[in-house]
Amino acid sequence: MLAKRDEGTLRAWRAEAVHRIEADYNRSADTHLIRVDLPRYPGITLYLKDESSHPTGSLKHRLARSLFLYALCNGWIGPDTCVIESSSGSTAVSEAYFAKMLGLRFIAVVPAST
Image (cartoon, rainbow, N blue to C red; front, side, top):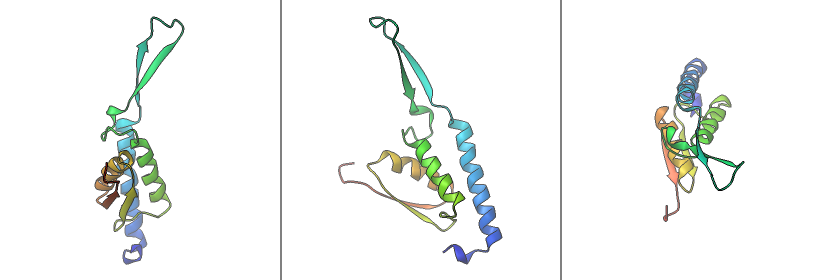
């Protein structure tokens, strides 16, 4: 399917796709840590990761972003690609977000219990 477009068009599409994903990284790069004091356990500090700062709220947001960047940089994703993910749910949520961001079709295959 990628052969239907000329190489210059594909290169421009990929550059724009990488730019969009990098912009997402700049918005939600840090996972905030919430300090929880444990008075009954002196010398021990507990930190919780606040993943809600990601647009998808998913623990797998950074993983999905990395997968999309890797696939883009290796030429595995193009403007006509349909991304298919087999998932229990959280990875698929984030991958759907990135697929939509890039204007790609996305299909999630999840267990009926999800």
